[in-house]
Image (cartoon, helix red, strand yellow):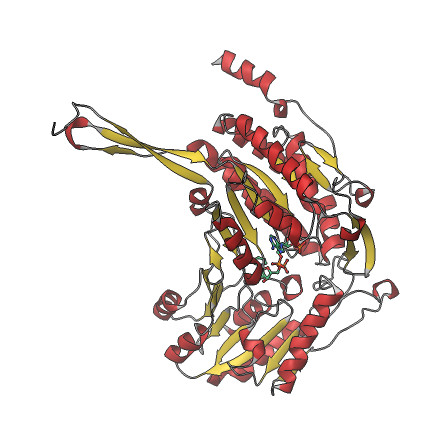
Length: 516
Ligand code: NDP
């Protein structure tokens, strides 16, 4: 026993205490790739492929970064392949300890990481703190599961038996969207690493920062060099990754259109695939609902991270008899949202990710008005009082009425702060209209009728349903979509299936039964 511990003490550097603190000072002037345990500049240094990283709150350019080319991707995958030979052999309990140490170190540096996320993404500081905590929770959760991942024993006739081994896949690729940068890096890396895989992660070009810090913390806490790598770049870099023959699995979060391209790119090697894609989710408010909670739920379902949330329930169906009262309370709460500098403690609503995205969201609002929808609140760009924020990308949280199911605003994902109100008369009608979409990421309902709550939850075609709340996602709860919203699940024990493969071993206890 003691010799086992002594051996591990010398083998695993995580047991050495590290007091390093992480600082975002000077962050943007250093190379943004992290391969084989160090920050490196992309070698495919083609200046025409540089991308600008912009601070959404001010419109200021934070840095220019070269996009990673094929050589960088090859290098990262090779580093991850080499690390797989080591990491997959590390006992699960040791993997868990390295991950737990990573979680503690993230927690020690939570404030600094949250500040960097705010600067890079534009979301308010209170939300960014929750996002870092969500990554920490995922790492802790999968660290806890790692030592108990086992196979099955299956008795067979005549005393023979079979057993299954749950084996890691190899090099996994994670590709993230820009709305929850560190949370996505945590949600993807935690189950991958806990299962003994290694990973190459590509953040969105808009939000390259915090995945890199996560990689540095993992490395400092004893993760072998190359077990978690970060390559920066645009869609082309993502394509190099998903089509790389050395990659065994891709976990992607992003739009439906990109998800379809990635599925095709994975087909050649039959790579394992998790897709977390877009949504057009419904929220049903029944006449017996607690209307204050329903109004709060509608805010949570529409205006977190400036409405740039895949699971948002932008189609709010309200039972006709309570529409006016619900709308009144929803508007009252929405008016209380404070738009401004996302670094300030009392700001509840920050800046959208980019000028192009701000224009796109405004285009949806203008288009809906042309189709006959009306604005109950918001519906316009806004400039906060602080002159430093004059070039930031702000839109008021927006509530629209007189919306019909066939309008573009009801059918396409806006991915911005636009809630639409529609009325219904019967439960059956509400369910039919809620399901009338090719997407099925999430849904929600508010009612005090417990039988109706479960009946409706069972009928709604979506991977996640919230009853009397919206958008809360603890790490133990599986998350993912039905229909074109995706494949596979993130979080919860369900994700273990997506990061391991089962080997069945049959053991004969008697003679071979052969006809000749
Ligand atoms: P995109 O699909 O545009 O991009 C997502 C990621 O894929 C980015 O890192 C992007 O790089 C990369 N990428 C783009 N093209 C390719 C390609 N051909 N091959 C490989 N990778 C590629 O989505 P957004 O970043 O605009 O994110 C918004 C979308 O994400 C929304 O539809 C939203 O619903 C969805 N989403 C889904 C979530 C879920 O859990 N279901 C959660 C959050 C968002 P780059 O950015 O550099 O172009």
